[in-house]
Amino acid sequence: MEVELNLENDKQRHQAEEHKNKGNDYFKRGQYSNAAEEYEKAIELCQNEASYYGNRAACFLQMKKYNKCIKDCDKALSLDPNNVKFFRRKALSLQFLGLLTEAKLIFDQIVNLDKSEQSLKEYEQIKEYINNIKQARQKLDANQYKEALNLIENVAKEIPDAVDIQILNCECLARTANINKAQEQLRLIQDKYGSRTETYYLKGLIELYGGSPDKAKSILQEGLRQDQNNKKCLAIYQMAKDQDNYKQKGNDCLNSNKFNDAIQYYSKALEVDSNNFRFNSLIYANRGLAHQKLKDHRKAVNDFDKSIELNDRYFKAYLRRGDSRYELGDLDGAQSDYQKVMELDQGSIQQMRQKINDINRKQKQLSKKDYYKILEVDKNATEADIKKAYRKLALQWHPDKNKESEEQKKLADQKFREIAEAYSVLSDKQKRQQYDMGVDPNDPMGGAEGFETNIDPTQIFKMFFGGEGGAGDFSDFGFSNIGGSGGFTTMFTTNLGGMGQNMRGGQAFPFQFGGDFTQNGGAAFPGFSFPGMQFTQQQQRRK
Image 1: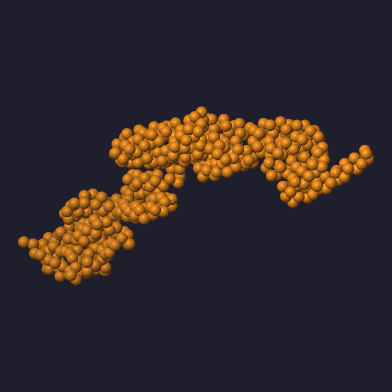
Image 2: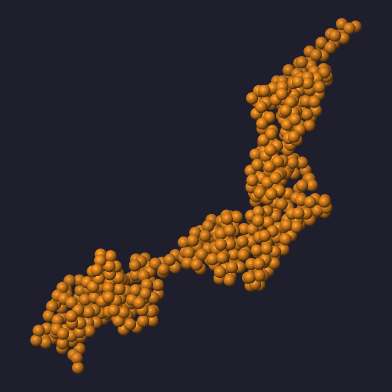
């Protein structure tokens, strides 16, 4: 009878080994469910074989059925107490469930039995996970959200199935305004574990740090109805309530043109939570707008800078900063902001292009030489005022009178040329009218037809002062016998550059020689010419 029993046991063990071998083949191919079924059959045939439980535990570990893995490991260890593989599978299951302290106790036993590189590495790793989570919670309590996220993010990546770790990671993502990642994390939590008491808290947190305290309030109120003792929901609800209250009051004052009151409410909103970057970015932009309405553009720009620092994708902050920069004369900065708005908001492209075109026009206008300033006259100066100014400044800055040093000579040359250029435009009615309309004589694309600024200032000087005795030697004009008395007053027309119109039907050249021109013996001076100039003579006998 005993022999028959032994034969039956041997047969069952043989069949169990066959199932074990089949299970091993399935496991190698990654077919863990089929492998687990074969190990189950082996266990049914031989319930006291530790390896069958241990192998099935390995399948459950791969299938993320961690509680079943732990149960099989416990059974296997009861049959084989010092098997390192069984300890390791149990420890990893505890780790993946987020039970890190319990897992570490098992790893403590492993390193006592096995000093292999793998065992020591996993032991150090579990200690690092525990330390990182501990520090992350401390940083979170200290409102150091970025530091907390840096500590927890890697742990959450390595232990994706531990719900408490994923909830902590989701909270850190929300508080650092990683809203899209936080929403995805929450979705994964809900898909895996269904609705939990933490769900309302996380949803409200995501809305709050996404810049929407009004939405956060509604969600958190529902969470408090579900659990009145939820302290986290209560604390965040009060914060959302305060932020939304101050924001709404600030907006109401802004819309009612009570800009100073709006600034006060926005400032209070900023004090509620300095770590709510999205919300505070919006509030800084609103407070900046209030400063802007008060024409305090420097304070406005300062607030817009802070808004952009907290959220560099908030296009309204760029738009408003561009407007204030424009008012402060920072045209390049304004243009840069408007270009950024075009990048961030497609609906603003046409409006921004118009603003940029306005800037370009203003930049051209500012780069245009101020001829009135050069001649030291105002824009309402008469023809006589302009002549008087030219006379004074041309004599003052004539190169022959400024030879004290090379530096003084260079300055005089520049001034002398600018004075002549300004006079050539402002003394001509048509050119002056074009100039006053915004035409830049130095811009070939600006419509300055007929303007000529590359002129010889010496010729203008000689023509202006040529009739006044003692003004200098003017023999290079083609005449040298200029008397100082009697004769006539002469006015010229010319087609030299922009200094006048063609002599035929042209207007009088603006330089009137105030002296008397006579030849030897007092005969009338019938006319003359010299290279580059064409003149006609009009004479009037002095009475």
